[in-house]
Length: 228
Length: 286
Image (cartoon, rainbow over the protein chains, first blue to last red):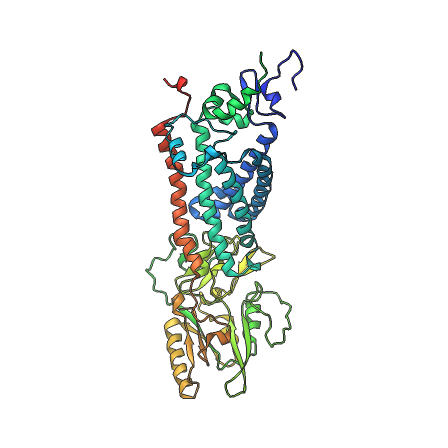
């Protein structure tokens, strides 16, 4: 990318490269990564705003965001299919970075609690993502598959036996409840950890952010930094 | 459209109906005596005509029955069942299939659209097409497999117990058309009394296992059926119908827990931020 004697701006580099240091910033998510992330997010929220008012009248007001409850019933399955397709891209794109390292075991428990208490300096862990992020990755992709499989009998109710429909409705609900909590956590941690949101918008983070939140990744990236 | 002159006792996806309880309303019921039904299908024709339902192409499946099952354009179906009796003779059983207007309607419990299914104070269960979103959950909730999806309107459709006739003091169209008197209409109390008397009479005549079908699993139905033989399944009727356990579990357990969990997650995030604040590198903490 960069030509001799000229340093590109991070946002330009981030169009097609990541895990590189550009001036004072580090490119974390290249354009394709960000595009896939936001495609998943957009389709998820369309499905959410069209699904929750059908789930319970308490969230009936959300129907007005998609044009009423009847429109919600029409839109929801298509939004769901779009979410599933976006999730396939997400799964394939991210999978190489999502292998749990030996020192990342135990994230579903003590490490998560410790992390949420902000009470430890993040241990040096291998890889670009911490264990919590990896758990979310697998949870979301698994949920996308679960939503699709349980959603089809709900989409075409009269083509499937009643008992299957009952089971699917309950499973669809349970998957949703779990994934809703996970996504609230995902969004909250983006807000509570300043400098995170820009990684998914502009693609780059500051060195300080990288050193603090992903020391392992920072070490890997700076090792490859050309010496001045 | 819900009938304006009728009070709504319960409405789907709503907390309250509009019934004030000031006006005393009798619960109404149909009475169907399968032992005097001659299978003339006059009730089918009357239903189609009164409710402006189009002529549905019949399907020959080796039976006298008009269609294999109810349809969005066919709300009243005489089911013809053939059996061999214990002494080797033929049995030709006929039963009028239609919405049973349950006192505890599974369709209403399952429906997610506010006011799309209503139960009037006289017990009639009705679909309101302007509120229906055509999701088909009512079909999942119905123990009798009655509500059907109408492909043209995208809504669910079923027998209304001719609520538009009943509210002005007329009997339902099917009752009006029945030539043998095997169909009657009146208050639930009256129809049950009539039914019990008929069952006693049948027993005295040698129909030893005759029964009145008014299943307690759904708190009774707005259609009481006299069966000559005490085997509801011989007539394509469920032996012990009730609101499906799946629907109960979903509406009464999973959903409330889910709603609480959803709000708890959001609230928990606020509390967490209030307690711990943003997560910043040590050098930025002041």
